[in-house]
Length: 109
Length: 425
Image (cartoon, rainbow over all chains, first blue to last red; front, side, top):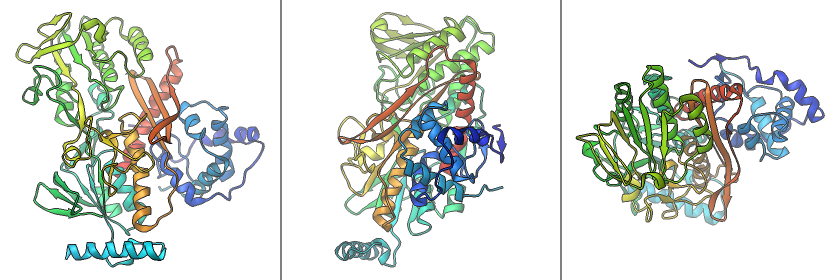
C-alpha cells in the first residue's frame, strides 16, 4: 500500500527555494485560472491533500512558497523531469494563480 | 415531452446568442444534458469534471456496461505480482454519490446524431445536448493470420482489461523452466506504446523470481522501433541477461501465421513450435460505437479539433482517449484524463457559459522494468496547426542512478492513486 501522510515533506526545502527566487511573491493570483490549471496537477496530486507514494501534497501551503518552488522547477534548478516539463510552460501569472488556488484549499482529514 | 424540452433549450440557445446573454442553456427550465459513453480514463474523468464543476447545472449520465472497471494501466504490475487484482479494480459509486452523475449500466449500441440521442442495449434512448464518446479501442481480430476472437483465450491479448488480464497472468505463471513465450507486438497506432515492453519486463521478472532461468521471452514486432527502446533494451540486458529477445521486422521477416492448436508461430525467418504461451497483441482501432456513428471515417480512429477535443464530424460530440487521433499525444490513460479536462471545460463553456481557457495537455507514462526500477517518458502538448503538438518532451536514459529509478517508481505508484482518485472519487 502507498504511504499516506497529511504532513508533506516536499515543502521542507521551500526556504531554499525562496532564497533562490529572490524572496516572497504576490499571493494575489487569479483563483479561477488557478482552478483550471490545477486540473493538470490533479492527474497525479491528491485533491484531498494527502501525500501518496512519491507524489507530494500540494494544497494549503502559503502562496509565496508555492510560487518559489514552481519557479525552481521552471528554471530547472530543481530535478524532476515531469515537474520541469509542466512548470516550464507556466507564466508568472499562471504560477501565482495556481498558488492562490492551492493556498485557498484545506486538507481533508 | 423530451422533444419539447429539447426544443425549448434550442430556443434558449438562439435567444441567448442573439441577446448576447451569458448563460444560454440555463435560461430554460430543463438542465442541459451531457451523456458520456465509456467509464475509463477519458469518460469517467469527463463525467466527473462536468458534474463537479457545473455544481448541478448540467445533468450528466455515464453509460458504462461494467459494474467494476479494471485499469489497463498498472495491469502489467498485476501480471508482475506487484499489485493485486483488487488494487486495479474500481467502482463508479462515488461518482453518483459525490457528484450526482446518473450511471446507465448498459452498452451504447447506437448514436442517433440527427435526433441527438444515444440508444442503449436496454432499448432506452438518452437525449443529449453534448455527447462525450470515450469507448477505448477494439481489436482487429483479422490482423494476425490464424488468430481470431474464437481463440483469444488460447492465445490471449490482455489488451482490454478484465478476464484477459487474468489469463495473461495464469498463462505466465504456468510457463515451465525452458519454456518459450512469444509476444506478438502491435503495429502503430495502439493503446499504451510502452505497454508491450513493460509487460515483457514483467514476464522476465516473474520467470526469474520463480527460478525459471532457462525460459525465454521473444518479442516479434511489426515495428522498426518502439517507445523507450534504448533504455528498455539496456535495462533488459542488465536485469535479465539474454532472457528477453526483441526481433524487428527486418530480422523476423514478417509474422506469417499462428496456430492456437499447436501453439506455433510462423515468421518469414523461423517457426516457433510448442510455445509455452503465445501473447498476441493485435492491431487496434476506435471502439465500435465511435466507428458506427461515423466519427472515424478513415484509419479506424476519430479526428478531433485540437483546441476542444470536438469531433471534426459533429460539433455536439467530443471524442477522447484511445479512440481519437490526438496528434503527438500517445494513447494512454494520462492522455485521456488530460483530454477529458479540455472537453469538460469546453462543454461547460458552451452549456452554462462557464469561463474557458486555452487548451493544454500533458502526459507521462511510467514503465516498471524490475523492482524499484522504473523508467518514464512524457511531455506537454498544445494545439498547433490543427493538431495536438508536443512542445517539450523527456525520456529516461540508460545508466541512470538506482536512486532516480526508485524515485520514478514511487512517483508511478503515487500517480496511479492520483489519477484513479481523479476519475472515480
